[in-house]
Image (cartoon, rainbow, N blue to C red; front, side, top):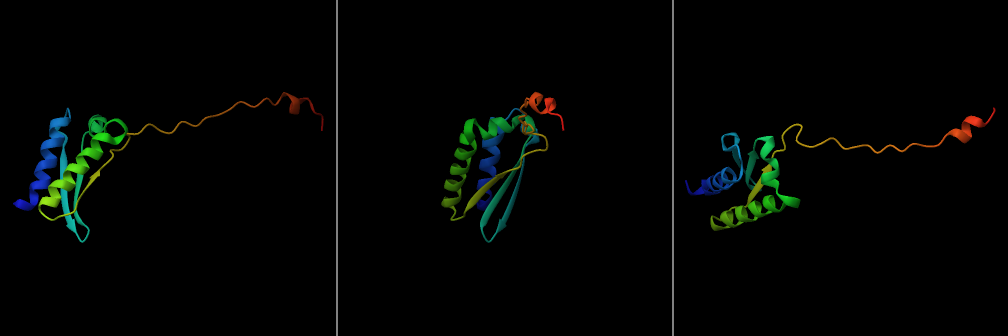
Length: 106
């Protein structure tokens, strides 16, 4: 029970931040590296969890490390990015003046 304090803490914090708390799913796995909490949320709530320049996500990770340190566990957070949550990278095309080449007679 004491080992799942990190899971309960993350659940409480994330559900308090998002607009769709029913869509929050947290998986807890333990391996030789420590505890890994995998967070799945609604794509519409991704910005609220990440925050401006990642500040909110960084703060949540810091707090999870503190919670883990109290129980001598290393706690890491993985935020799963839903499909289609990023805009596709825009390709910049530049028009080239080919009129000089067109005038050449080969």
